Each structure stands twice: as structure tokens, then as C-alpha cells.
Image 1 (cartoon, rainbow, N blue to C red):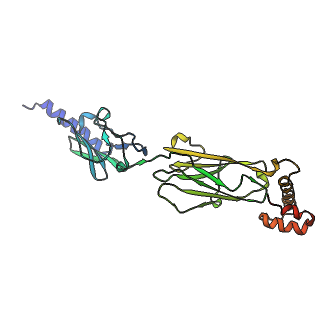
Image 2: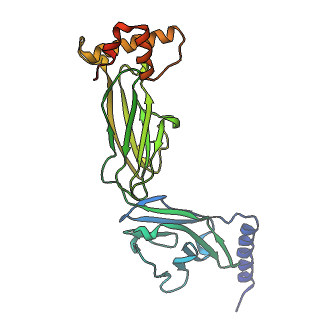
Image 3: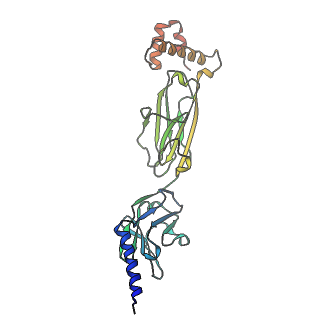
Length: 301
């Protein structure tokens, strides 16, 4: 026999839920990691603001395909849909959390969750979020260059090749810790599906005469700025080299003499307000301005 109090309780409960839904207070959000290394675990958390005793069903979906479901009052309450790949960690799975172990590439994709109330019957979907399974790099990027010592006016060309990973790591060049301007960078068509190469090219100027550090970052995701700690990347590797100038060579050596002459010419250019020129042009102009020094400028290093 249904009492008047039971009817009142039912109407109060229904009124409360109707108010939540009608005023769009009913919210559902999915929380998951953006990147997960292959073979590791991930927890997909379905957050909702409706009291649990008003919940009828919670479902997790990959695309439009159901992955896992909780239904209150069922025995057992959980249902695992057959999907390839990771296995459910039952000790860390409940009506709001789904934990998958040993994830593989097939688990990459768009995920969402939905929550259904019992009275009134209403279903709310979360936003979709992408989960990407990655294969981490096993080695640091490799920097290659023709020589490590330069003089003012020389053109520096250095390549950096990432380690193999999936997806392909993004490369970033830093000079003394600062990101290099885009016009100094040249990318190459990918020669394989899992690695990339990026070249930096710029002319050595007098401001570089104390030497500088070249750093190549190979990261997943791409470079997020110097303010971001490396732990914010799922994969972060780097390699650095020090590029020196000939000023540091023993005084009296051919290299030091060439550096001194070219540095002197570059200073005259600044005083005369002459535009900067490549080393070859500086050498040709010096032949007409300083013919007695030309033999030294032509000596190979």
C-alpha cells in the first residue's frame, strides 16, 4: 500500500531532479590523460553532480561504441563489452572510474561517458576527449654538424634527428635556451614513419663571439615554452652541443688570425653603416680594401 508520505517523498525527489535538469545544473564531465605510454595504465573518470542514489546507469564509450557499463540494482552491476586491447583493472573500477591496464595502440581514440537518472529518466553525455597511446623514444635526438668552430660571417647549418617514436616527436631548436626564429629553420620530408629531422641555419655574428649552446628538443607533444617543466611532456629528450669561435684558439694561430681580421672588418662595417654580408662577400671586399691581408683570409681552416 502506497502511503501519502511515500507519494510526497516521490514527488519531492522528482521535483528536485526536474529542477536540476531544467536549470541545466546536471553536469557530466570526463577526465582522462591526454597521452599514455604503450603498455601502461589509464583511468577514465566520469564526473557528475547528481547524488549517487539518483543514478540509474553510467556508461563509457569509445566513439559510438560502448566500452563499459554500470547499472544500479543489477547483479552484477558491471558489464564489460568485448573490445580489443587493454584489460579492465577491477580493483580500481567502480560506478565513476574505469581503469584499463596494458594499453595498446588500438585503445587510441575519442572517449566519452553518459549518465542516466532514474526519476525522471534523463541521460546526459559528457564531452568527447582524445586518448592517445604513444611509443616513447629510446634514445636522445642526434645533432650533426660539419664543424664546431666558426668565425664571424660563417653560416652555421646543423641537423637534428629525433629518436624513433609513435607519433613522430616534434623537434625544437634552442640557442642559449631561447627558441630559434622560424625563418632559421628548415624541415625535411619524413624518411620514415617514426622519426623526423630539423635543420637550423643562420649566420654567425659578432654577438656570438663568446660561443653559444645549441640544444635540440625532441618532445611529445611539441614544445610548450620555457615556462613548462619537462615533466609536463609524456616524452621529453634533448641533446646539446657547444659551438665555439676561433677567438679561443691560441693567439698567433692561423684560425685566430682569420677570426681577428674578420671581426675587425665587421666592426668597420658597423662604423660605416654597411649592411651585413655573407663571409664570401666580406672576403671579396676585404681584398680590395685590405689587399695585404687577403692571403690570410683565403687560408683554409
